[in-house]
Length: 67
Image 1 (cartoon, helix red, strand yellow):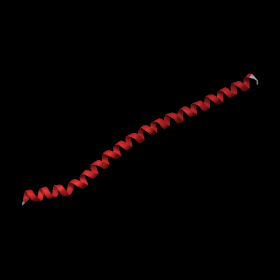
Image 2 (cartoon, one colour; image 1 turned 45 degrees about the vertical axis):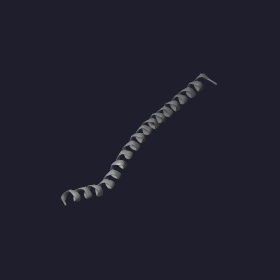
Image 3 (tube, one colour; image 1 turned 60 degrees about the vertical axis):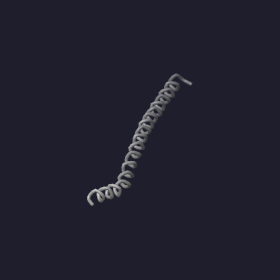
Image 4 (tube, one colour; image 1 turned 135 degrees about the horizontal axis):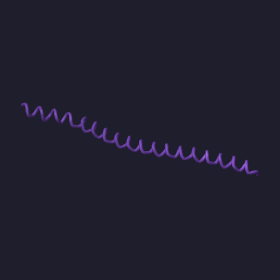
């Protein structure tokens, strides 16, 4: 192989490495976002469940207090 061919191959390999690093960074960012979304959805789910279960109880308590 000539030095020009070796240089060309090295440049191509560097470009591939940059692309792989870019995809790796984007994947890490996506993983962090999904983790935050899962945490938020669990909290929202708990709040909605508590609201649904607590509403009849609050009505009963209010009814007992007013009568």
